[in-house]
Image (cartoon, rainbow, N blue to C red; front, top):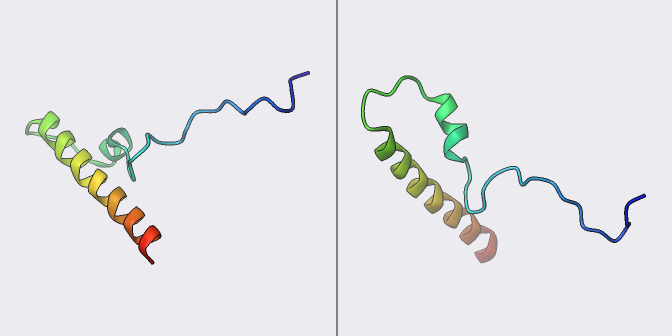
Length: 61
């Protein structure tokens, strides 16, 4: 039997600091004709700003 005081080990549902991770968002997008690395970088920057904004709202109000 396992130790009842042992912390649970389970994967986190998404990477820290993200609202919608890139792999999840990529599934919703269609075929890309441009530079996917550029789209990914832009998405991750916008997603990080969204995460910061949401935490700002939680903490400030």
